Image (cartoon, rainbow, N blue to C red; front, side, top):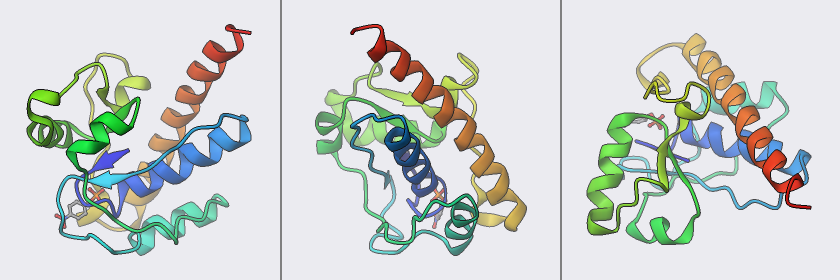
Length: 154
Ligand code: 4NP
């Protein structure tokens, strides 16, 4: 789960997807990172923490880190929260960029629409609730997609 600062959107995405994967019995390794290094070492934004906590998800122990080229190899799938994040990942990856592996997160909910998860960083609290709901719905769809795929392999 990748956004710009790794303090607002992607920590929520990490916390929500991890939570749902655990509930679904999926043994997934979910991490998050930011393409810029401005907030490395920081905890998630207090409003992201607050909104997550209201949904019984604790993201307070996450620590912001910067996305690196090695993440491309390490993970099976990389979700970019927005198209400017995808552009950054393309630049960081260089020739290792794989468009099948690095995808826009909201295309899971709205296929082919290439929509961004809005950045709540500059706005007030309601923006964080909207972002939570959007990430929550999308994560639910991702879980259903892969849980179904795995159960059909039995
Ligand atoms: P995020 O929001 O990408 O959802 O973590 C941002 C947080 C900080 C900055 C940009 C976006 N920043 O430039 O400091």
